[in-house]
Image 1 (cartoon, rainbow, N blue to C red):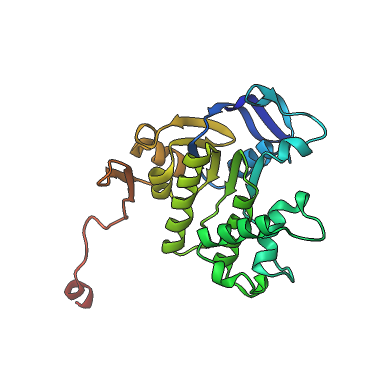
Image 2 (image 1 turned 90 degrees about the vertical axis):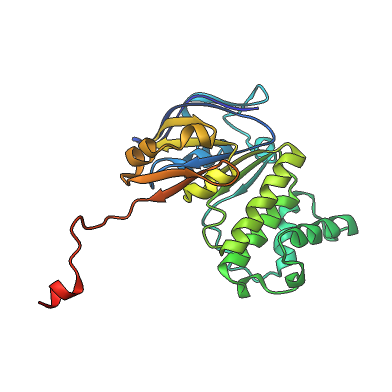
Length: 267
């Protein structure tokens, strides 16, 4: 269990998040949603230890996150930030192998090499293993980084907008894979998504943030209401349900109450 107990995060005088209390269970995908600039990325950076809580405590299976010497804490995480760059003069396979950088020597053993190739196969890019990573599209680079995170075999997965550069097919591929691996490995998975429909489809729990505070935490069916979306995003929506019972968000397009016909305009 990954627990936040009354956590407040500050950078200088600026408060990025305040009084966050939530418990995240193994084997579940927790999707963080909320308007831009509301503390979603700050939450992931705090869990990873890049930002230190100004108040409160973070615990993993009852053990508090240390204030110093964070190396052992971070080794338990697979962290995929949003701004990845990857303008490296390395092959796709070499980038994936960097996921085990702490364990690599001058020679990569066959077992590790096969693990890296399997991670690439899982994301559909094994045929590009020898390609220079800087020659790939942004979406392909995102999938390479996900393969790198897979290779780390983490206990906790943190992903910040992992599908933002992907087309629909690869969004589904990555999130389906994340779902399967979370269940199989008992990961505690925390992923930031802007697409509310993807959040509803793949999230076991939604962590709803606004103005740096926790607005709601629960299943998509319990959390995603038209009232909440209107309040957070300032957009009127209809909330229906798909064939599996997951909420489906449809913005209500602004329409003229008295449409003018082309003939009237011409007159």
